[in-house]
Length: 375
Image (cartoon, rainbow, N blue to C red):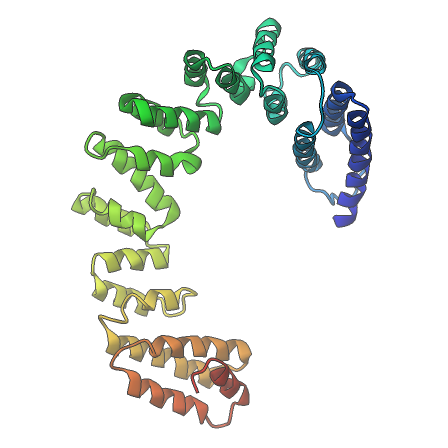
């Protein structure tokens, strides 16, 4: 795989070197068109990859070209070029799109970072706006460009108009519009947030921001819906602490039981409800779980005696039947848990002494105990 990637990168690096030569000669428009040509070549490339070493070759090539685009944008910050070269590039670029890619909604989206980097001045932005109108470029193909240009030209009214049309198309456009409304108009903020939520757009990226700016008193149901989704997705106890206060008793129980498959989160929620007996019984039914240690910490304080017995009942049979450093490390972790149990110090020390003097002798176990500072 690495050999295949290196061979492809060698070709792309040679191409980028040629672009650098054009940049150094002041031919910025030709360098940018060369980059576009390279991207087109990647879309059409038929690689002889007999063993499928690259997996999705087009995806890999797009990622490499995306990295190249970032480097080109950095280079634009360090070279001087006249606006006329930008105009020429954009003219040819949009004609190329209209002639060869007008049905591909993703094509222009790839070049949005470059188009934005070329439109940071008011004059350039105004020219790009006129060109988009002249060429009848669909705004939803380039939502960030279509909105950001009006920020550069300081046309707030037009920016908001475009953002209202396009916020479901791009997460950054949505974030910008939500930020604006969170500061100026709560009704519009909620309207926009609800529309995104109902369309299932950008939940993961925007959920924290949306939740932070919801007025719980004004929008209690939406607040609950968003918090439900966030808590269920992140399995976060801190989120659950908020959620439990807005659910009915039945809703809360339904939510807890719905996440029974996530053993740690389930026990943490029961801990918040102080349902320690249920946790104890649940742990006894799941003694072999990989998450045993994390679950047990929930009941160490309310059930010190039972917690110690559970640990002892795991340690001794394990040592009777299993050997090896891996096993001993796990036993040491259980002993460290036992040492956290208040009131069980004497019994824990007795257990440690018993393990240290185990017959037949287990030098590796003794070593693990010493390394952990237990003996």
